[in-house]
Image (cartoon, rainbow, N blue to C red; front, top):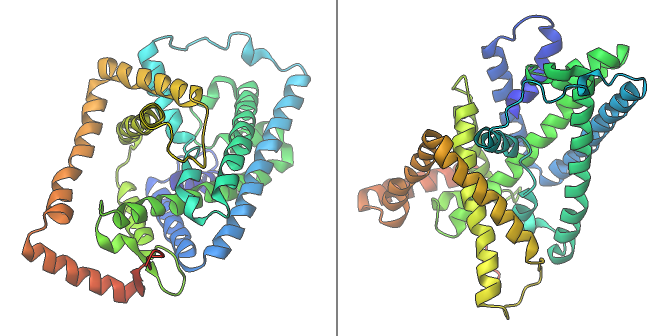
Length: 358
């Protein structure tokens, strides 16, 4: 997302020219550091900023949808006359494309990561899911139809699709669209930073990651060590020139674990039907989800075995580190880890959260 933001910022500057990869990466790095700083030092401001970003994102998509509808109403339907030309009907290629799409539209499951920070989550979490997911799905589908109507097959090659769309039909307003897209992309990146840090925080609190990541800044009440940890990982991810393969590997693994989680819902409903469930879904929902994701996981094993094996190796590579650094830590490493934790605790003014049960 940081690279997407950098593309949209630099596209008008490099109009008609190739964007310098180093400039794009440097701008993406600065953006990641800035948003990490905001998320770490002021949670309330981050929330207000996120509301502005979300409103801007929806506004930009509405402009795109309305522009596309007007364009089609004027009779410009030529791009749909042979819309399937040049496409591939291979099921295996479809599955890989869906995995890349899952990464592009990531965010559908992020609400679950923020339940501890929601007011009345048993009421507001289902409400947010039932309202936001259909709304976002409908808007995104209409936006893609507008892109195809205006740009046609060129939609597959452009690096800043909204900017090219605005240039094609919005006239002098084309300069507004890059700003709207940049703000919207910042919002998406900020959400990723906020929610992903909570995953590391919860994992460390449960003993699955180093204890340091379970610390909270005592003044800002934010998981600052987790935020900085993710920032460093994100900066490392900017080093490779092509992330498409890495995205495919990681998305396959993520879909595998998501399938396991949804399968656990079905298993628990069958084995332990009387457990208290403040949030309860109809069984047909996880059943359909598990069936679809299972199919998507089986097909790449046959068609893209290298991607599946690479994703599995990336995941399994964490097991030795877990058993050495977390589970069965040797005494010398324990002392080093403790010293590093104390150093970071002073650096971030952080401590482990209090247990409310005590």
